[in-house]
Image (cartoon, rainbow, N blue to C red; front, side, top):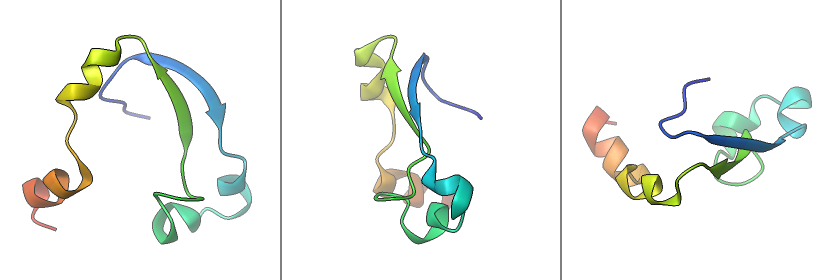
Length: 59
């Protein structure tokens, strides 16, 4: 899995193993993939918001 920041994986979502369609149907709710503790919290400031990413990729 490509991650734009470094960190420690704290938790994997077991629900997506049983229902992988959650990744598409509810990505901001039940379809999360991992919980990550960033190695550097300030690195989060360089990430795109969902709206900025949509604009970048033309979606």
